[in-house]
Amino acid sequence: MENFDLIVIGGGPAGYAAAMRGIDYGKRVCLIEKDRVGGAGVYNGALSSKTLWEISQKIASVNDTIGGKGREKFYLSWQDVDATVDEAVFERKFQYSCHLKLLQAETMNKLLSYERGTASFISPHEVEIVQNDGDRKVVYGENIIIASGSRPRKMKDVKVDEQTIFTSDGIENLKDYPKSLVIVGAGVIGCEYATIFSNFGKTKVYLIDRADRILPFEDTDITDIVSQNLEEKGVTIHHNAQLERLENLGNEVEYELSYPDGTREVIRVEKALLSIGRVPNIESLKMENAGVLMSKRGQHIGDDDTVTNVPHIYAVGDVSGRIALVNMGEIEARHAVERAFGTIRERLSYDNVCTIMFLQPEVAAVGINEMQCLEKNIPVKVVKIDYSVIARAIAMRKTEGFFKIIVTNDSDMKVLGMRAVGEHASTAIQTIGLIMKLGLPIHVIAELVHPHPSIAEGIQECVRMLLNRSLFKSSVFKDKLACYSLVDGVKTPLERL
Image 1 (cartoon, one colour):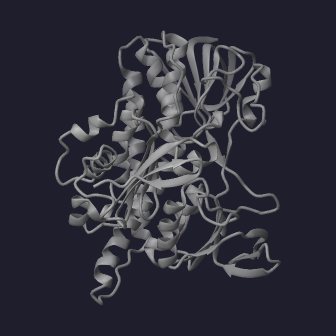
Image 2: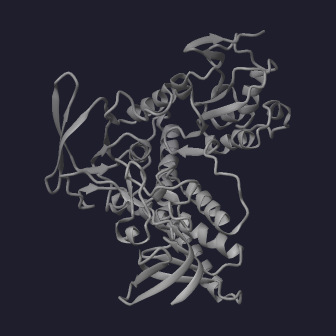
Image 3: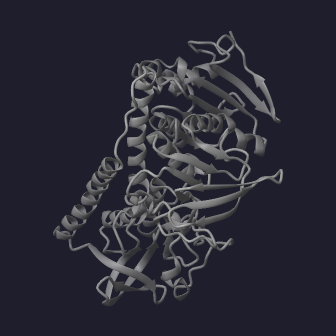
């Protein structure tokens, strides 16, 4: 039996990051992956779906430009789209595979062992690997990290064949644009795919939303702009809709909805996509042999700052049930390794996690939003600037969107969160994420010399409004700028001249 300092179960973004961080410490690492290194971070997930979004955005942008001039719209064949996605996936896959092979060939005391197969616990320190060729072996690990990822959640009594009814694992295997598509679930992933297919302009999209608005966890000014753009692209959003039935008819899908007023409707479409969350890949791990417990709700592996109830076993990425993002999974994985072999004492913070939603327009977020402030009765100051007064947005002819920054309602004005909606939103949000991480005062942003013209200048102008140093005054451009306090649910303008 081979002995390792670290066994990593799962070669997705989190598992791969854990293995590499273990090597940094000069530890012997065994990385186990049953399918493909990179996991959902490359295949049927982050990279592939975002490549689809990028292509669709370019097509939509071209058509927005030429459409107003009376020209015929531009379309790209699905085969061309598919080929571009394949190129992106292959490029990333090639990087991973070459890196692994070259790393294993390095004369660095053979720190890395890569095993293709399915892992399961025999004891708290022993893991059996059923290799893809059928052979079995057992390895011993002083420390073990579970990073086995997740898969799309399915609906009871709905047969997913990945031909007519899809999950995100199969939707990119389409042979052509569907004439019509219903998406079950109006969360981030559902809205992203609604954006993608509506941007291409070849598919009639229906989006089933159980709530009265999509993305119910975000502020209404964000959901309103995203909903409006989807509807302008021809998307039908079924608000407050309860899905009563979803039936695969072979070449079609029939679904039935009911509404609070008692009405019902039946609609037929060509394809359906289920986007109702994900579940952790833990069934084959036999965690009971190691004594690892699930969370109190029983839906994910229980952990405290990545450590399970068994001190030398860690859970990171999607299996921990926290924030299911590639970047967060990688950070959790590195943190777990540092806890195992380093001297790190600081707990992971999720307060300054920067996220991005690939919608129309792009939405980026960090920290809390206005709705959460109201729910928790946190007194704050809020400042908001429209893209239409940012020079770079004007130059790009992309003036739809806004920045909104939330700070404490005191003289310190500590940054609590930001929402960015519009072009380059994900790049701009990082400034605020860093300010929050370092605990710096907001005047630091006001005093920076930003590149001009740049979208980030909008953040600087927001801060200047809070400090009463702004170029434009919110009391004059009331439709473009806003600066107000929010205390006990009461919004009070902070108008200054």
